[in-house]
Amino acid sequence: MKNPNNPTGRAPTDFERRVYGVVARIPAGKVRSYRWVAEQLGDSHLARAVGQALKRNCHPDLVPCHRVVRSDGSIGGYAWGVARKRRLLERERRATSRARAA
Image 1: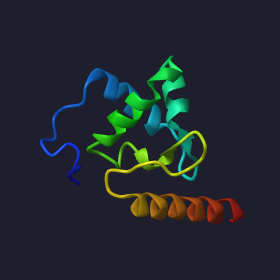
Image 2: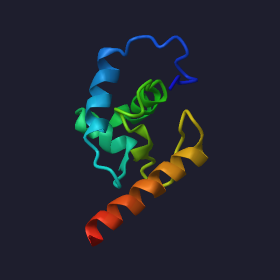
Image 3: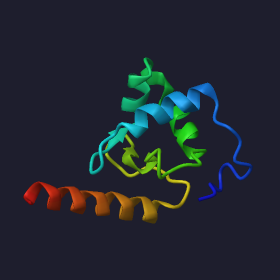
Image 4: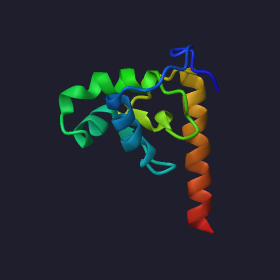
């Protein structure tokens, strides 16, 4: 899937790789804030930089950036559109709810 915010598919920076590593560990059906990701990197002031790094994510199948939301719980942005982000989150919530019920 080609990211509209990284049309050249350039390699991620070291910082972006660190962000992607943290985000890749967020469990399906759960969300974390940009600030939480920044705190995992050691500096809560990096929240905006985290957002910019996720904006350039070329591998949403490996790095589930849709699981990162704003600190107030609102949805935030998504390179492929906020409506798609909502659908992905809802699909994951339903799947994890069914798995727990089984």
